Length: 382
Ligand SMILES: O=C(O)[C@H](O)[C@@H](O)[C@@H](O)[C@H](O)CO
Ligand SMILES: [Mg+2]
View 1: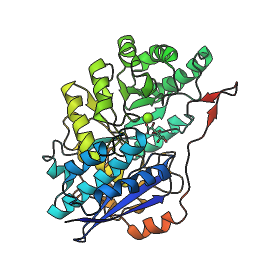
View 2: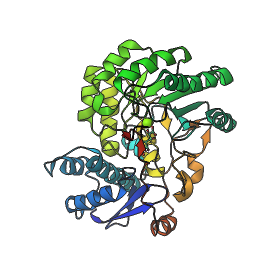
View 3: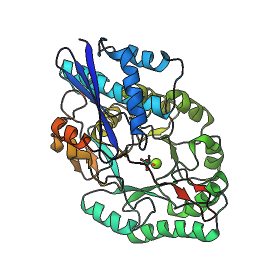
């Protein structure tokens, strides 16, 4: 079997799908994208095609190493997202060629269903109580929200109190009938993270995510010493070589590699295994589309330490497109009481509505995240 063609489709709301065709008519789909830099990743995908066209798509490990090492420079959000989407498509082809779901190629199921969580509130956490109420009716009992709005390097006690009050109201309203993670989203600096974690301690969130920016990873162990709240990170780490340092330094209890940013299934299965060796849980990051979610699920279903899966149905980013809009086998993505079952169809298990993708790609928006500023006019972390 030989790879014959790579085609990319940038589609609403902010995703990109990759179609890899072969000379045997088997097609694989991937989702290589960095939110806000889709065109850059698209260029990277097509630059990688020189290593791929004419090659056997079933030699995933070799093609992965060629893409990672062959161009001298490596790593980072753009190249690892391009590799991720290509890798997903190659696994899709291999599974389809053998007539089995990808998780079968990775050793089979380690669980029968996977717990998922939903986002509530938006960029500026608001109406979270109402959001939780609505999603509980849909059977969810685990949620995530942003912890703050813009947050200064040194921030007022009033801003800290506002962030804590929001969480207190959740516990007042629902007690521990629900659980929730709080995403600091990299908005909180090291000095304030310790203070905010201290004030959040009594409300026992399930985890605090990106307590500081990934480039401040040396603070993870120090922050972990100051709190009993599990700390989570990983969406802005792009290979096992980055995660290695975090595992060795300690402090992170839940790693959240993104299957469309951290090198794909081939890389994230390795990260999951490394995490297990350090007694670290896996909760793949996925605010993206159906191929990314399917790729996460295949890793979840073969990873003993997978505990939670982010899924973006209804997430505040999905303006103009929803996760299942481009999927024909919507029934396979049914979430019951917050759990999803293994995707049964061969490959990644996503039957892509190609016509819908092509139509939607005709005028895809160039989504970018908002540029936030502090009251003094300086740039604020979004
Ligand atoms: O936890 C999450 O889903 C992420 O922090 C998410 O909000 C961001 O990755 C966003 O997609 C960036 O554009
Ligand atoms: Mg996050």
